[in-house]
Amino acid sequence: MAPPIYSALIISLGLGTTMTFASTHWYLAWMGIEINTLAIIPLMAQNHIPRAIEATTKYFFVQATASATLLFASISNAFLTGEWDILNTPHTLTSTLITLALAMKIGLAPLHSWMPEVMQGLSLITGLILSTWQKLAPLYLIYQIQPNNPNIFITLGLLSIIIGGWGGFNQVQLRKILAYSSIAHLGWMILILSFSPPLALLTILIYILMTFSLFSSFMLTRTTHINSLSTTWAKIPILTVSTPLILLSLGGLPPLTGFMPKWLILQELTKQNLAPLATLAALSSLFSLYFYLRLSYAMTLTMPPNNPAGMLPWRLNPRHNTFLTALTTTSTICLLPMTPAIMALLPF
Image 1 (cartoon, rainbow, N blue to C red):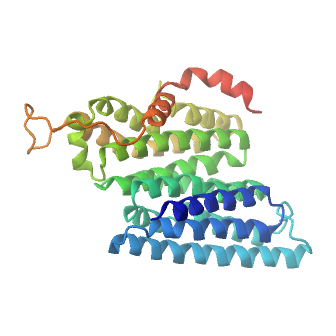
Image 2: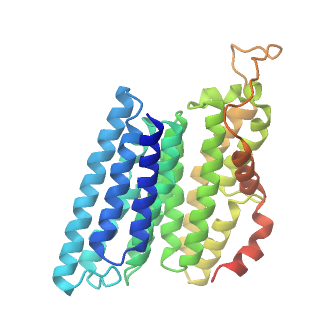
Image 3: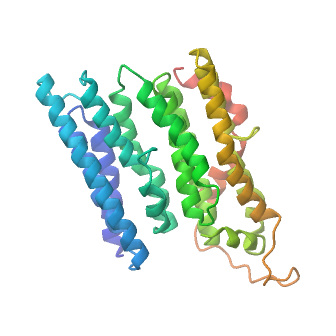
């Protein structure tokens, strides 16, 4: 893809999300999400291979269905209330339809089945955009329309945590595992959104930080299959140490950064007299922890059969600047001691 076209598409991604963030009108917010969708489709299809075209087609149909549902629900809300204001969604039916449409857009369970299949057909860089940036605008709208009854958020969040962990059990393709990881983390964000929006924001930011670190590590080694992880020690030895720590941070193990949001979410749920829900969410996160441990084991404790220990391939200097990867990896591993300072900055 030509650099000017690529730059225009990236700018359009930013423009669409910014338009949604700045909107108080349903139609303008819908337009921002559509600009986002139309901008990422050429990025998804830039590799002219059948798998990428198939993933792009699936993504287009799912997003078109969700957009049509969102537009119908917002028009119905405008008909019932007489205005297009995003904050004015008093009717249960329209707010539920809007929530489900936005849940389909970001891949929340049980509307998640497109996410692993689409991720499998994308390059790692496009998968990173789909897993992080494309979630921001729909999540912002979900936050804006928070229904009076939080049961729908609790149901979607808990289902996403369970299915996101369960779905990654027998996967060997890293992009599918990362898709299920994204579904599980979205579940934690939605679960706490009704009770503490600042904590949901903190969870989103830390998720983006950890996901960027992991994707950039896989991009450095060009790894897309679990069996390829065992060659990392011969390509970039330092990643054999740092990547398992990133994986364990995504799993929420202390004393890594990923423990912070889960700890605070469980604490908040307990304060809201939802201790059984907190217990179920904590136990369900063990599913995700299993496949993170599986990836860590494949990277650190296995060796490929066709690469003897005494014969290392040439280690060429990385073609990309690794400063950002090093910075985000360090933050992914070491930010837990900063929890009191972060809690003081955010309005909990």
